[in-house]
Length: 439
Image (cartoon, rainbow, N blue to C red; front, top):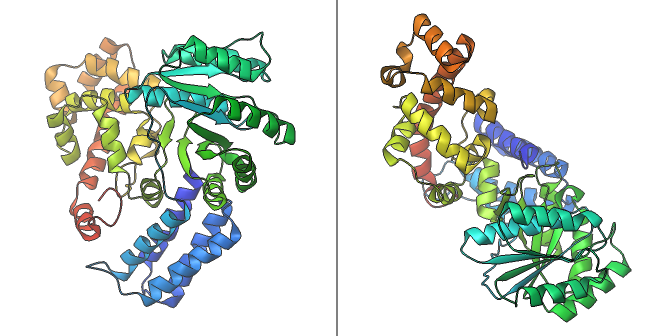
């Protein structure tokens, strides 16, 4: 999962201060010490970490908590505010058909995949994206982008025989008649060098894209600062697409490095799949890291599919049957992996690992099992005994253990959802009001 170690460290520090018997200078310093360890391990610049931790310590000890917040709750809010300030403004691109986006970066940064992900993203927003492969230095770039364009049903242009990237782009623009949102995957090199920058500047000045986006590999951590400054010095970079944020602990360092270099992170690549791209918004990002979720993002995902509202309400209350489970499993799959959906919910709960790791094969098996149940069994899963379990197993082509696995999953989900809908969650949401994301 993206930024898992960073998230675990930050939430561990928060849990530690919450468990402190007395909220005093010693407890605050211990909390700040844990924050420092976590941020440094995420490769955030040492001086930035020291400045941030100093601000948190001073404000937590000297400031009076606003509203009805306790001092413990206030230090979490202070941490949230400081992290948001550290990670930049969170700009958004306002695009329209007829404009050109040029992606730049070194080879291995994930530039080609990022081009396809952006095309899919803007297609879902109602635009008409078109992809141009202008990276003749990497032989596989043409085939990769062509295949991805077919997967997302987006028009594609490239020329494997042509070695001049500017000529490829010009032909691509003619081919598409400059219509639609034109996304250009430019040439790259194995490393940052003068030849790459000179070629890119030549192409950039000739094409005059409306937006130039720098694609960076998040695993390079603080080295992102050097690359960002180099590209900004050569051309007007609008922002950064940070890829491979699920591949290591240095993502936090890369984000802060980009902000330090004067470029906003616009998108995060959160996985290998074509849909694993999200707009970077510091408030929502930090909210998820600290365990306060991203309800806005969850609602955006939910809008893409048609939820059964009555079923969803029963699920939230913990008052549901296997009929609802069947419905929600199907809907959740459309929204993405279960663990990524859960991290958008406020106030992280103890979710059993087997629920987080629901694989496609298991989901299919659960469907077969539920398809073999009678309406009464689906409505009364807690009443299913051995004889019914054996019959359901035979009818679904599974084993009795598989049926018990589904019933255990149901029980755990019921317990989890009841816990999420409890008074403590509602109380905390009222306390924080609009101060935190997802509140």
